[in-house]
Length: 110
Image (cartoon, rainbow, N blue to C red; front, top):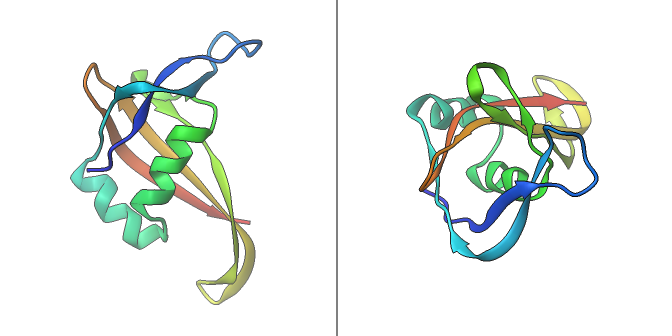
């Protein structure tokens, strides 16, 4: 579990379905499903990167009532025998009343 301090509201001036985390006094933990935790290691992301993406990147609707966001990280390393400069982390998650549940995580190497 990763603790997150913030509330999530519609981002001013954005599209009707874009959301962004605004820092506040309330706390909402981020839970990782078993599948999401397993996929982190296979895809090369960390819980901290996923939490940071959820906290700082705009949210967009995903399939089945879920949300998604994307955040780029400097990578400058090798993944599957190929060199990449950027790693993009894309968590798929559900915001529940008392927590955020990460369902899966996609990682793209660019």
